[in-house]
Amino acid sequence: MLGKTAGGLYWMFRFLERSENTARLIEAGFRIGLTRSKDPTAEWKSVLTTAGVRAAYDLKYDNYSAGQALDFLLRDTSNPSSVISSIENARTNARTVRTALTTEVWEAVNESWMALKEVLNRPAKETELPSVLGEIRRHAALVRGAMHGTMLRNDIFDFTQIGIALERADNTARIIDVKYYTLLPSASFVGSTLDNVQWETILRSVSAHRSFRWLNDHEISPASIAEFLILDSRFPRSLSFCSRILEENLGFLAKDYGVRLPCHDLIDAQREKLRQHTISSIFDEGLHHFITTFIRDNNAIGQQIEIDYRFVG
Image (cartoon, rainbow, N blue to C red; front, side, top):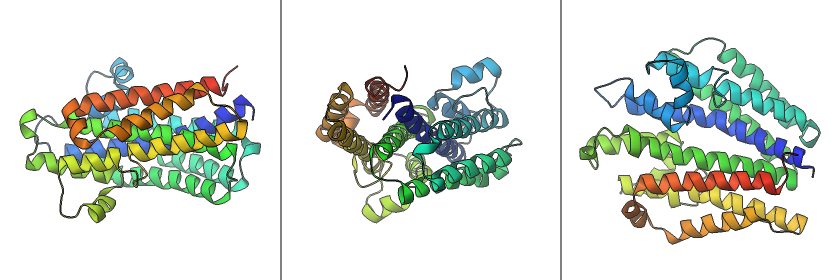
C-alpha cells in the first residue's frame, strides 16, 4: 500500500476518534464540575490543559468561562483538536482514500460531517450540552459500525485500527489524568466521598460504568477503577486493550509485508511494561507520572509508525 493511502486511513480514523474523545473529555469536566462548590471555571481550565490546547486557548481568551471553553473545544476552527476541525479533517482524509473505503463507510463519514456541521453551527448552551455530546458520540459509532460491518480484514483495516487504538489510548490516559492531576481539589480529598464520586464520573465519561459494575459490584474504589481503566484488557477503552490492538494489527502488517520495523519494538516494549505493572505498583510510582509516561510513549509509537510506513514523502 502507498504510504499516502496508509496515512490517510490512519489519520481519518484518528480524527474521527478524536471528535468523540473531545466530547468525552468535555463530559468528564462538565460532570466533575457539578461536584465542585467553588471556582466554577476551574474544570474548564483543567479540560483545556488535559486536551493539550490550553496554550492556544490562552492566546485567544483571558478567562475560562464555560461558553468560551465549550466554543473553543467544539466549534473553533482555529483549534485543530476541536470537534468541528476533527470531523472536517476526517472527511478530507476520507476523500483522499475514497477508493480504499466501502460505500457504506464513505457515506457514514459524509453524513456525520453534514450532521455535525448542522449541530455545531451555533454555540452550545450548557443546558444543551448532553444532547450535543451524545450526537457527536453517536455519529462516531455509526462510522465504526459501517467499518466493522463492511471492510475487508486486510492492511487497509489494520491502519484504521491502529489509528483508532492510538487515539483512544491517548484519550483514556488524558481522562484519567484530568481526574487525578488537575480536577481533584486537594490531596486531602483522596479517598473521600468526593474522590469516589469523581472516579465514578470518569467511568461514565468513557462508557465504562456498567461494565465496571458487572465485574466489581462489591468493590468500588479509586484503585479498582484505575485498575479497570488501565490494566483490564477486556474493556475496549482501557490502556491495556488499546495497546493489545496496536500490537495485533502491527503484527498483521509485519506478517503481510514480511518485515519488522522499529515501531514493532516500541509497541512490544509498551506491552511488556503494562504486563509488569499492578495497580499497586502504578500508585507507588505515582499515577500522574505513570500516565504522562504512557502518553509520551504512545505518541512516540504513533510518530514511528508514520516514519516506518512512509506516510509523508
